[in-house]
Length: 380
Image (cartoon, rainbow, N blue to C red; front, side, top):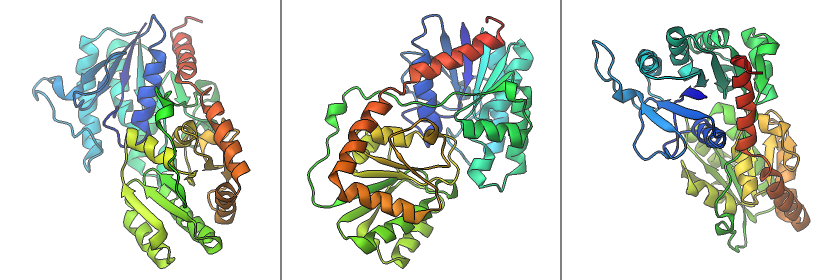
């Protein structure tokens, strides 16, 4: 079977969880011997791992009357224009390539998938990694919503990264429940986990790692930190990442009088992420609306206990993480305090967390995707 996938980012050049999930899923699926994956990116950088799939750069495919179109490879101000250009290139790719099924990752690639489907008349599945209801806290952009809705209406099947997202797709986008299924994300195994060791130090480290945006609830992390520091001084807090609320969070930290215990190291990727998490005593993800959230799995993988919001998709599959409502800063603060002050609590979450995430594999997620492919193709 040949699958044509449309994506927007791919390691090592990633700006969020979409690239991490695209890599993990395709790598897991590549273990199926009869499956060939061609992955289209707006702008590959040349250092992507192509040992288990083939990557096509949309920027290298000429469009009649326009030639090759330049793409930023990011999320520029003219994003909707780039999505339209990507759709135009997808038509050319569809004429050139041979494939049995189309798989579009997230809203940016839905128009491309639809274009390819119109040309080749093969089934199209879409993978909903997030919706604009998650990103905007309910203040939905009508242009984005229209693109999402069109993609969902045109899809033969819709895969969501959590039951939480599945419910949003059914209720907010008017989709038939029988057409929508859940394929939870997983985590890529570490080749050498023994390399990530916590170095001895007096103070504990509590880490937030992600986009510093409204969706991720960074202000709740700051407020919980202030509560913890009212009880003890032996803890430092790290907010790693970048985003439009960065300056606001720096101001809030100063306002709470905890700047001497707070660090903003900026955006991290790849090995930097694992090293930061392995040095942390607690990882916290207070997201207001998180379709899945791979980072807690990455934290638990290196033995870092995790606190996650109940409003996250990964809460559906994790048993050995502490779950609180995103707005309950007192519960968050109590959980942080318990982990950093009670060694037995830390040890239990450390050991059981590693064991749990080592059994959450992309290979199994890939089998679920394959079952969707087979169903759409009438093979089962």
